[in-house]
Image 1 (cartoon, one colour):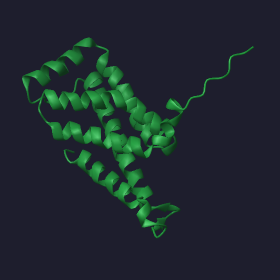
Image 2: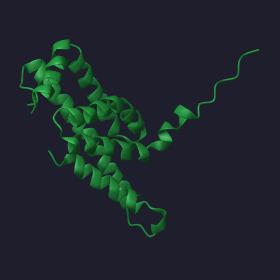
Image 3: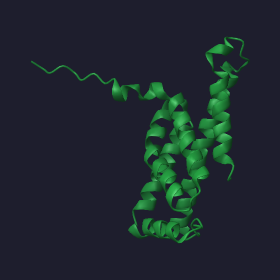
Image 4: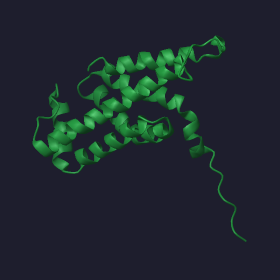
Length: 169
């Protein structure tokens, strides 16, 4: 499990490399998709699958009293305890993880999944940067998000290319 963000990173990087314009049309095709497309798909599925898994683990913790994640430092433990103490933050996070991870399983809804997961991924990155000091883990998830967002960039185009409807006269 600790290697998952790096596996996703390697998969997405290979997809990016193989879709390079220098490779031309000499790509192998499997079921009408190039190898690069399959690598990107695998990266998206792994990323979405991880967040679905975490949503299930949070649900297990909330509903069945399963132990939460062991935090390595007192500051990280205090942050985790504060999220639990709110009574709403972890259920909200669980729903966000489930919706975002589930949306990433399908190409059509992948941009929506990335948009839903953007705020938690920023928190994950900053949490691991500041509290337990595991920059590689938080940075891996953030970099994976950036690569997947780059791949889905056309899906976000409407956010900055929106043309307002003309005013009625």
